[in-house]
Amino acid sequence: MYRLYYYPNNASLAPHFLLHEMQLDYELLLVDRKSNRQKSSEYLKLNPAGRIPTLIDDEITLFESPAICIHLCEQHPEKGLIPPLGSKERPLFFQWLAYLNNTLQAELMVRYYPHRHTFNEGGIPAIREAQDERVAESLQIINEALTGKQYLLGDDFSACDFFLFMLSLWSLGTKRSPMSFPHLSQYLKRMAQYPTVHEVCKFEKIDLQAFQ
Image (cartoon, helix red, strand yellow):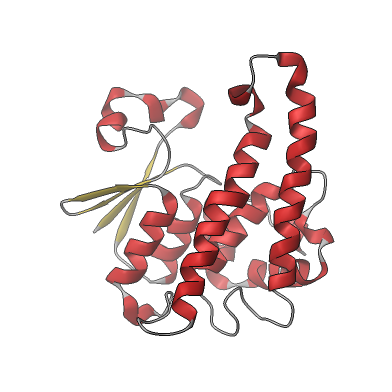
């Protein structure tokens, strides 16, 4: 059984989508961010970064959401959520997962936690404004990549789509909503109707009305 340490609408959401989609045997363990449990000594033994999520797979303990997603996909290649070795889509899978994590998610983290990036409290509004522009630039790149495609890699659904949907949820609070980009908007409407997305978001009490 997999054990996923999670918090609703956190970086654990993409692995939660995958566990549900693959119909794997798993247990969810809530890490209460409201009481800062991710910084507790007990949790830090599993995840020294003090962040969510963490996945336990027998003797393996993994943190960082994209690493967990890759591990789950490669442990269960028959589920078809990662392109096979040697396919031309496989490097694109890693390209987009890296871009989503290292660029879009990184920009969102600065936008929502600007106090971590300045000692000048008066500069926080300017950081948020700048980050809204950076996030919009990333969303535009993704919007263009989705032109004429059903999913991020083309016609085939992959774990990248779960990761993108997670970050799109977080992007709703920025100045330019992901729903204002035509190709991305149509994609997100389809994703919001996807059974796993609908069911996991219902479990985590995540409102999907913005994608209707």
